Amino acid sequence: MSESTAERTSVFNTQDPQSTLLSVNMSSVTKLTTVNYLMWSRQVRALLEGHELQHFIDDTNTAPSQTVVV
Image 1 (cartoon, rainbow, N blue to C red):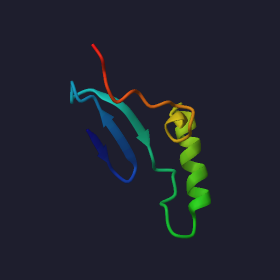
Image 2 (image 1 turned 135 degrees about the horizontal axis):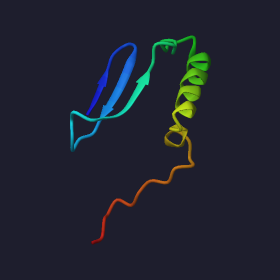
Image 3 (image 1 turned 90 degrees about the vertical axis):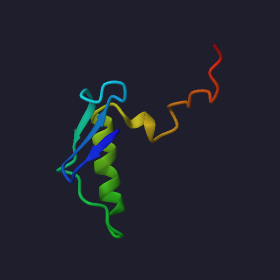
């Protein structure tokens, strides 16, 4: 599950909803509009790189297989 506000985004552990897996402060990121994509994109990329999450938006992270064989 996720919870979002204008300033903070949290991702919770689905097995233990009281446990937060990640909490990101978004207060310094400019709100995306039709004219500021470049500035917004650079801010979001820097934020993701700061939390070592950039591999989720570029092609360096390979997707897991769709089928799990036991």
